[in-house]
Image (tube, rainbow, N blue to C red; front, side, top):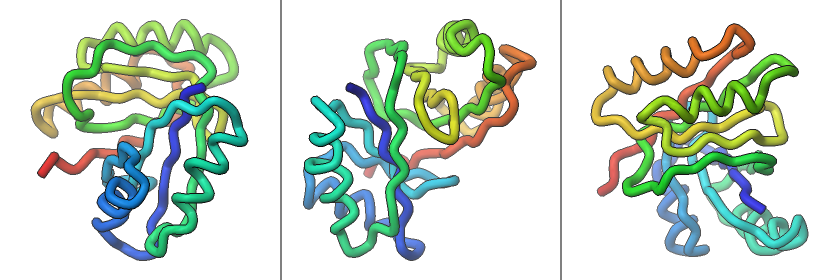
Length: 159
């Protein structure tokens, strides 16, 4: 089962992602936006999610909390490099799979999952610049009139 763990720091800190990577050996990506860090994980069960991810992340001193999105239906290309943004998408109750297909057809979209949670989909986007990221976000928003809201979280470049 694929999960997205969105992490909020207790205070403004760029050290949360590094702490998660170093302490827990998880793929933690720092972002600017609604959350501070995104962790993608594959888990065997909800118990595995809790014991090996959520409880461990929450025990770290800089972590304020976690919001978890379970992936119901994913579309993925082979990802060769770190995403430049994650786009959280809220859509009307119909057409989720059709919207997902249209978003996945955008060249810069590497992955788009239909998820359970406050948002309906999460897309990983790879671009070369902020201006091209803006264009991709506009493309995502324009695929359907049933997209109600998007939140874009820009990632920090790799060090």
